[in-house]
Image 1 (cartoon, rainbow, N blue to C red):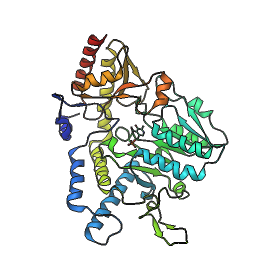
Image 2 (spheres, rainbow, N blue to C red):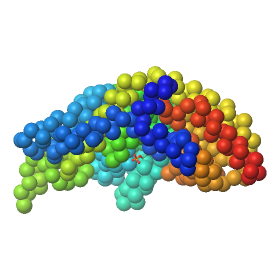
Image 3 (cartoon, rainbow, N blue to C red):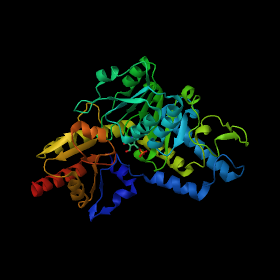
Length: 404
Ligand code: PLP
């Protein structure tokens, strides 16, 4: 990737512990290009007002920008209608919305849902909380050690009581890109809707909700060069129409009277109670424009090169184990070095300006699969370089010499 792309990210000029920043924690959150930062700043300087309620000029400007952002997301995901795009705080809230609205109103005692063994806690815990309340059960799609879902086992999990499949598009630990089109088709063969957690996909994979034919798809802006605190949930309109509202309050009603049940707004507003994160939506739309301008093809070509190069370099380190070697994967390296605690790896690298994450990465069932409690994880994005990988590997080699 060209240097001009790195120059678009002001934070990449930071020094950390007297070293140039090498940011390899992109699965946790990505850095933001100048145009996203500017779009948010410009919103507060020139357009800030609350949306939907005002007749004054600023309120109309803010409303236009907010609805334009929704349209930008619709086009980006190739949803059929902007009424299918709900603004949420992020993937976590998107899944909680599905659990609270669809789950609480439609799941019954004795029902079953199917999740995968490689889910982030965001797509596990909301269902566990609801399962305790409603008495349904959760079945789990296992994965093979190299990090690919066992689709034969998946097919056998369906019964007449299966009501939902929930699966991550791209694993935040292994980088596996799951075949969600195939997984969707299998769910639909059984008449079961599918929810896809796309938190890790948006920055790396072209998403087309109609081509994949999933029923629900959720994303977080901050994982794809956008701001924190904003994301989107796509839900097919025919499903969304049958769901009760998620939260109550302003913006989501037509009429409220004491002594009567409120009359709710139409889609998508019925699901967006309260003042939304308007500045966040503006920054989110700008991040999508940024991705579109660069293009997934260039992003993927670059990241695939980094993946192949990094994999080879890391495997040259003695006593290093890499977790996740799926045929289709993003540039994420989860690893352990025999005899060194992952926390020590994180601190050693931080002292040299390299940001990686250590721990269970909110995927404890995945860790249980491997019989480990955590890993060190370097997750790359479009601005990372081979030189950075070289320095990262050099530091790890130095560490092995010192520690073992
Ligand atoms: N799903 C996956 C696969 C993730 O990696 C994450 C965050 O790391 C989430 C969901 C939750 O995203 P957020 O914290 O933006 O809601």
